[in-house]
Image 1: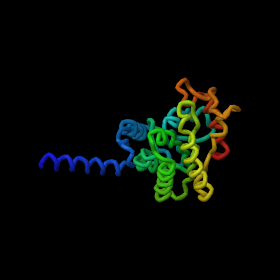
Image 2: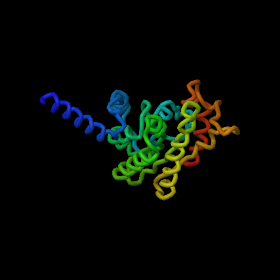
Image 3: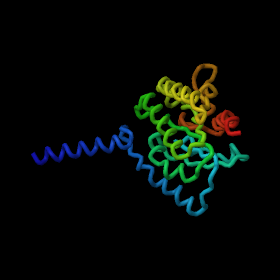
Image 4: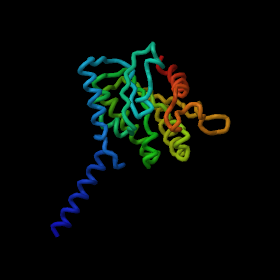
Length: 221
């Protein structure tokens, strides 16, 4: 009986952790080292407020913002292969201290690939916006649409479903914007343009980032 009670206790503890971190089994604490590096950099270089903050998954982390937007005051806080729930978890450490005037957000790609539904991706993003605006009521949030990629083409319908939901939200909230990069990344054959991707068929190369920067720049200016 004692073993049975122990097993039930461990199961309940596991369920509590899953609920705390969004229920997809991915613990955001796996990014703790990356977040700690951001904080170490802030202690060394100081925190500048009022910038354009880029946050999200590896598509943000790999972006050379100084090359794409040399005329703008930007800060890159993309980390790992993160999901929306990860950015939610670290809001107090990688968003709030900077009091950004604008947030450029890209995530949802890894979420869908991990099995989350379009509804969950939308709900997580809505929660991200609500939590940001509770603390920073004047900060604009720009969502870069989930990209079509060669590697994850089989999940494109779910990704586009999530995009449509977020685009509708942006149409109803003046503090939320939606940047459509999906159509720009699709070739005449109806599939992702291979010349925009690294060899893994997932991450962008320089040409891909030029497409993203051109689509985003009117929103930033």
